[in-house]
Image (tube, rainbow, N blue to C red; front, side):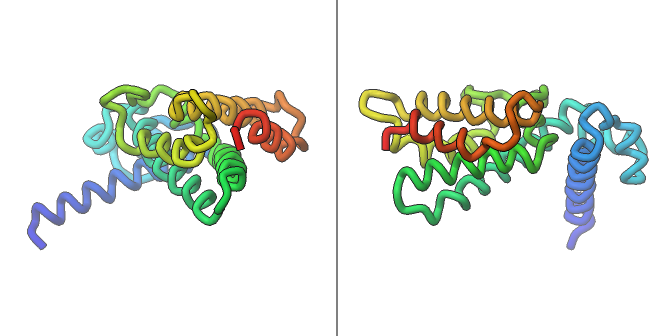
Length: 192
């Protein structure tokens, strides 16, 4: 391995460490606790080293969002892959989405709530975000109904899932009815 290759590998390792540490800190204490000073202390590098990878917290949030979007897409595909009928796929997708949001609140916020400097719904949208939407569209497009554009239906269904995830997490919905809400969403929105 050349010196250049070793340096590039070490740089990539440091970047992964920064993102993983930011994510861990955010999940434990919230995004307000994530500062370059705290990250530098936790990973035992100087703040200038952090700034050599990311210009600030916004870019770190963006990196966590991209990583999280890839994980969300994989989770959705894993949940829907074994389902043979459209209803089963849509139900599995809804459950997997809500479970991901509940298990990873800081990552979910990085993807959908916080400013990570990422473009959404544009030509320059990063691939992991496009892929997360594609994972939704793969199952939802087939149940959009006649005359309804599959991407438009996917946006509305996704917005409903996002609303459920956000309202449940903030304590604005009673905690025991997640499954009933999921069934109602699938039954009333999807054309099965």
